[in-house]
Length: 215
Image 1 (cartoon, rainbow, N blue to C red):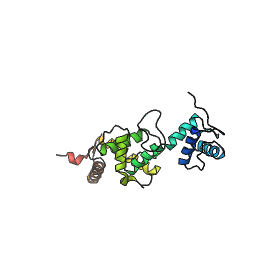
Image 2: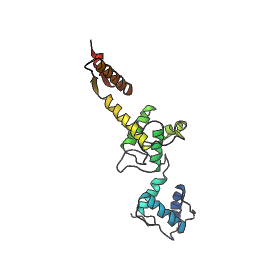
Image 3: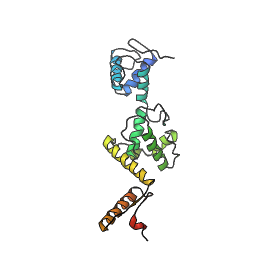
Image 4: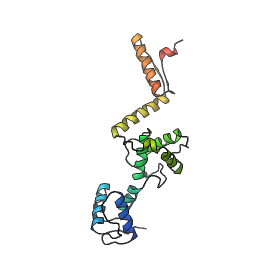
């Protein structure tokens, strides 16, 4: 069933719902259920911000974008699917995971593979089933840890990329069998230090130096 377009002079509960959601997003307009100038201006600006075709009306695409933009964390279950979940609640979850040290990357409001991986790591760290599903149990745990993440600044793109690069490197080491060796005294010293650094980064890796294998 196609949604009826909401536009100038429309009235009723649907208009009021649109106005309430726009108010949540910071737009200045009255919530009176009547679609007039201020509502038109707010919708036009919202469409521009969301990359929708220019206009001052609410069609199905605009309505879906408006709903996504006004979800709060806990309003719905989040998990990896196609098409991806996206919206304000996803960005909030990403910000929290980043603040707790479970690096998602730049919080873009899209629940993709990096977000699922970070969520699984978070769940496992606190003894939950690491299913990658943000539901009631996970939301309760997040609320109990509010003191640890509330007020923390967002992770910048550069910081996120650095953390993710380290995490990927550590992941490779965990599954590797590597032996560092040197041909002389200096080379053996460098090999030993490289092995120590690798083991400090990934304690359960199979990285060692040739000297440690000597009998």
